[in-house]
Image (tube, rainbow, N blue to C red; front, side, top):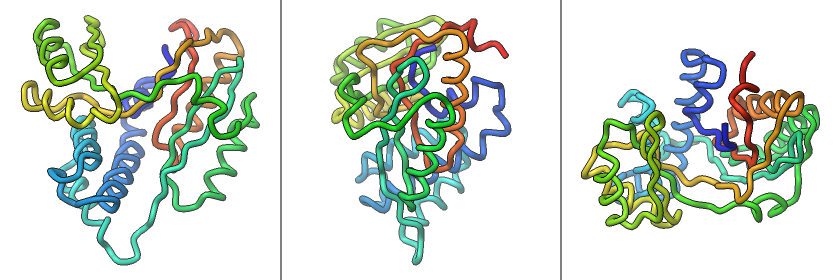
Length: 246
């Protein structure tokens, strides 16, 4: 298990698919509303909104829920969220990046400081962790979307930097984060909606974490992901599958 936690990973770690679905929808809806408020409510004119809607669809988010989230951007008295990145260190010395959307910096910062402190870690200063990561665009397609050769050809032609394939996980396309919308649109036209299309933090050198440190780290990540203000969690950890057993 590598250190990239995203909506799909939240579902799979403890088998809490049904219980977590509402929370996943809430997080995606917040991103949709924020994207619509920051730019045009028309996804054709707003790449960030287009990607957020696409991710909602990939999670089977109902169409009316997506439309309500867009409409909320122009509603009087609606919440005004700010994107804030936090960086910290967890058990085993791993670096953790937490991307948030919050309407209350004191609440969010206080909660994250508590989560880290109670689970063998601590918050760091700006850029204390990100220097060990690259910020890239990442697009995922299921195995059934295309053959390995067809996906590679289409992705590279669209401007992707790298394409990998796994018989279980499917196609993983990587590009410069500023090119994510362009590459994603080109692939969507050819293969349909992707499973996900996101800007992620990819670690330079993952740290293997085992034993009690791994268990505490997983607990910390679970707590972070369950916070309503947290959108994404990334880390430079590597945990063997055997450590995931309850």
